[in-house]
Image 1: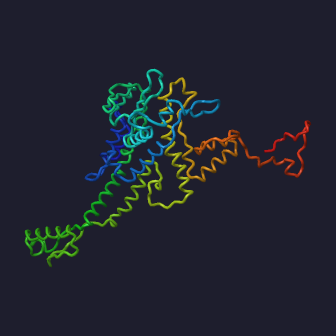
Image 2: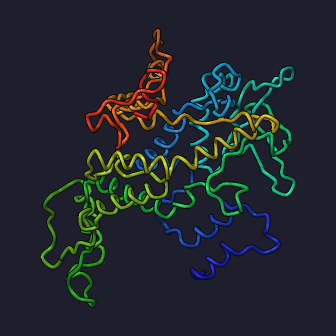
Length: 425
């Protein structure tokens, strides 16, 4: 099949296959160009055996699950955190009788990246209507029907077998090709690059396990007499002997005077396996949106570059995931009547405070600018409030450019005998 034909079949859909999933079409396309008789990476287990994939998945899932997810309610013009609400209590502790919320969210992100979709089922109290638990449904237990817009769940782990409406299932999706109905695993998108990485790893391991043994041909003599003056039986015995001695690690092998060994194998350096493995790490990082220094790639970087990379990682990689989770949780956990005054949001403050000095500078700037009270700054650091710490302060080390104080003059007094009310900040 030509490349043009495969591309056309990937992006064009006939009436008969209108309801095919993104996974089926992308898998069919990649199978036409996948390397034959080589290591193939097509499952989450085989992908996680690659170090760069494991590290990228670990960074994304661990970072997102480590952020505090908050239930906020509108208080005046701002949204305030509601630590005692049932939703916040679930986010801060036990998601269900099998998992805490960190474990649930981390595995949901892993499922999203490696399988393309993660399905969560919220359960509400029949009396109060408040959220009681949140279940991460098993792999392959959910089927989505885009025509009926319903989910069929058959999960033997939780003993669930039923149809659910779209607003009853939290559906987290990876990038898709069917308009956003179902997600596609990153493994399928990156299967060619992952297979290259797996083949480089396998060839390196095979060479090390075999002691980088040589392989080649025994030649000599002419076509009429076979290999030299030797008969075919004798040459076969010599071939077997040479092969055994190579496998045994013999450094010097004796050959007949009429025979010659021509090597056909390549060393790891000749095959440029090191460069291939370095390239594959960078390629994996591109697919997952993780900077190479985060996966401990051999790249020199300084503190400022690492800080900028962290900001880019937040804005370009994490923020789309976080936004999807916030909207999906808000839409599925909050009734429509409460969404204008309540919301689900991540607290991103821990991402920006990378070290103690940065945290101290951040709190200091917030207190001095009147953005945060001293007690709020102490609460940010996990300290108890103090008396008088609930008052806002602002730094007063600037003045208007035409202020009398800058000219060495006294400020004019107002009629009441006090100082003028002209602005001096």
